[in-house]
Length: 273
Image (tube, rainbow, N blue to C red; front, side, top):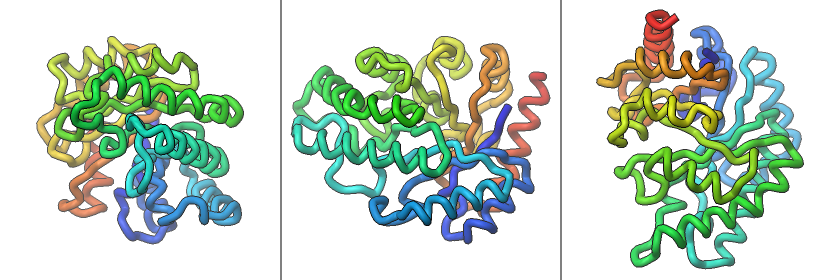
């Protein structure tokens, strides 16, 4: 397994301090929320991008790419019936594709539930087609840069669109391009009726990225979810992508979250392998 961690975990820590802790504990991948880089990505210069990438290289961590793509933005929405907003959203995603490539990443996780929820009175079919139309516009830039988008299903507590892995697969099929695939998240899968390990097996050929966390919003192994069958399923399907820790509750402290998440994942995988 290749273990990574999301940069928002470290809050306002200096980049070098965060990278040093992550590398010391054993993470080898780094996933980036754009809002942690700058308030306006258009003003995040090429020089700043190069400096950031060099800091990662010096730490020994590999840049995976981006997630929380539309979080803390305004004027963007994936499923809206407004064609101008959809066009702006596609253009912004293209901007992020180039940011990802400039940083040395090759993956973008498309979650951001508040920027994709279907409006009251709008059909799910309309939402799916509108989302697919946005992604189709982005596909040429994905092909040009080699970056891939991983569609992230999220539980019903976070939104009303793409709540299951099957929903994510359906949107994938509508876009119908190898650069748009599937992301799976433990917290989100916990909201489905199907066991998590079975969801992993059912979507083995489509999944290109994986988030490790718990429905309690903390790290893997810090709640009630048993990660042994999860890692058993990942091992069984021959998963070679990243297992990236994404947490939302930081109350236990950054050091504890970062360390205990890794300890718990290694212990679970040891019981498999």
